Structure formats: C-alpha cells, structure tokens
Length: 246
Image (cartoon, rainbow, N blue to C red):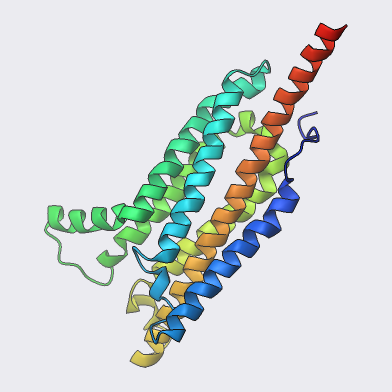
C-alpha cells in the first residue's frame, strides 16, 4: 500500500520532474545568455548574490516546506512506521532551511575566512579549499543521518531513485567546486594561464548546473514523499466518511 498512491487532483511526481527540469533549464540558459549578451562572463549570474543564487535558495526553501509538511502529517498519522519518520523530516526541513540561508548569506565562505583568522593561517591554494570541503561535510553528514534512519525510511522507498540521483549530482557538484576553486588542480592539466581560466570557468558553470539539477531531483523526491503521506491521510478520511454514512 505504501507505494500505491491514492489518486488525487494534483500533479504526479513523474509529471512534476520534467516541469522542474524545464524551469531549471530556462533559468540556466537565461543566466548564461544574459551574461554573454551584456558582455560579461557566462558565470556572471551564478556568482554569490546573483540571480541563480536566489533561484537555488527558492528551490531549497520549497523542499524545506515539503519536508515540514511531511513531518506534521507523519506525526499525527495512525501508522506507527510513519510516525517514526516525523523527527527525520523535521531535521531535513531545518537542515534545508539552513542551506538556503547558507546559499543566500555565503555562511560556509565566512566560516572559511574565520578559520583562517582564528588559526592565524595565511590563505594558500590548499587552504582556500576549506569552504568547498565544508560543503562536502554537509553532504557527508546528510548521508550519515540517512544511513542512521535507513530502516524507518523504507516507508518512502518508492522515492529513493529521485534522492539517489540528487546525491550523485550533489557529489559531482562538490567535486567540480573543489576543482574550480582555484588553479591548484587545473595547473596539473595545463600550464597555460588562459586555458586554466577557461577550465575554471567551465567547471564552475558545470558545478552550478549540477547543484541546480540536484536540488530539482530532491524537490521532486520530497514532493513524492508528501503525496505518499497525503494519500494515506485522504484514504483515512474517506474511510471515516464511509463509516459515518453507513
């Protein structure tokens, strides 16, 4: 029963996915095209505090809202196995809200700068990777918590493919972020400074695209889980209505 959603008058997860990917593609193409048209770097609107940053924040906030909805509905569910998931979804909701703030306020970049000041370390090509490593730690903590909750999460196994793709893209994003942070790694490929700059640029754009699409898959995954919980709630309401009528 858990994987069989009750039909409701809302869009399905399979219908939502292409819509989300289409919107993300339009946003990405517009960001790159507008930057080139105005004579700026193609990365211009992916930079901190620019359009794509706030687009990312919006996606994270939407996922956070859905996670909160799932937590509230799970808490009052008559199914014990679903009630056990309530805390997990509250943690996810709070974590995603923090990530949206991090994206908007560049919190992990500030942590990086604070660490350099606190430790009295001069920034180098290696220590400059600290902010990217912090993002990687976010991802590892999320995965560790999922592993810890794995048994309870089997209730939502029909959504796992969306989250798996999201995590693969998220890992790709972290790798591209580290590679494009500075010339440390690209200098191993070429000594041409102009080519190094181009590699960093394209890796940076690839990183942002991977992040945006990863968020899209997480969004659809959270929506799928919400529909699953909502369908159980609707099914219960219908059973209660039938009981009253009889």
